[in-house]
Length: 189
Length: 321
Image 1: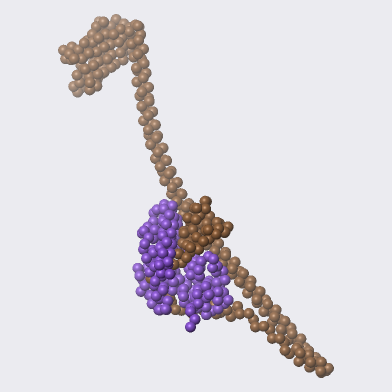
Image 2: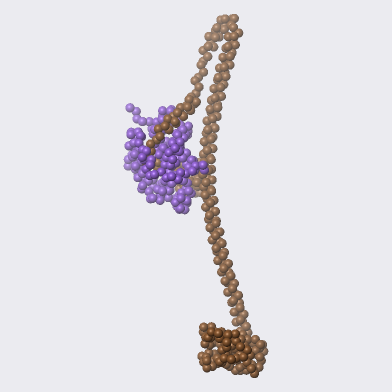
């Protein structure tokens, strides 16, 4: 039995047009990418459409992945978020005013590979704890940027705080997340 | 922007939250190549990549994978390089055959030439296809770059528009405030102007009084309170040369309604010097002109409002030269 190939290996096989490696990469990351874009777009049809678009871009631009700029998951999530943000910020796009009910996505959960579930769950718990450890006002601005794709000025307008305050909150929040996640990693890894 | 400030913007950059001048400054700095900031970008990108894990799981629609794989399958088929050309194994046998049979048919030659032409055409077409594909790839890359530019410009435009709106609101507020301040100042200016005019009037009065008092030709006549007002006292400063006089009175009783005090200059008979009312302390003053040179006595009586040509009421004050 050989161990499962790493994401970086899969990605380099994708560069040499290996469709099987691509399918494995899809299985590994589609759940994370999908729940992220579903949260960002708050619309299932838009999210499905984006999921397809994102993985096609992964296939086409795999050669542009630069390991010096982060690991494959960071590269993939960057692609996913920029595609979603492009849509959210495009003048044609009308931001849905219907808030997704809390946990609506969770009800749709299931069907993922049980082998990956344990480690994925551990990761999710760590990130949830890290986010929960932030002061409310820091968590809010980070979520508005990350999940709602708002810019610093839009956030300032939304939370009715000066731009400088918003920038400081995001920066401090990210620094704290970095510390907490690094600690958790050190503790578990 | 100082390097320290740029570094502070990296966490926001990792969340795609920068806009406006901040976005331009950070991107320009990263393009220049800064190992320290690149390492920060990497660290924050890794954190950002993980935030999505916190979301509740959502079932991935199964048909998306099929659609994506179908699509890349089609792209692969187009991309697969054309199989290498057959090595024309027929050339030699045909060549031998031609050499062996001197009476080779013209048709055969003709066919061979046709196949050669077709083969050349096929090679040409394949090369053309390859170069078209390369061109398409290049155009696709260019399009992706342009799309990225457009989205940057669009974000920039949005942020500039909101900055403009903010400045406009600020400007309007300041204009309103300024207009209010101007109105306030104008009202105060009007009040001050009225005050200055009244002070000028009083000053002129005081100067006139001083001039009369200082003049050696002025004489002072004391007026004593009589029976109706024993506590009252008055004074007339009289300048015989100019026939002018100033009259002051103190502690006269308050007037009943419909009544007035009237001052008289008496030569052979009384001549009215004017009517007056008193302030709450019983004080009053009057300026008199055309006082007869032969005046002997000054007196104050109480009269019906408006005064009379000849005194009719009780005498409150009197004094003689």
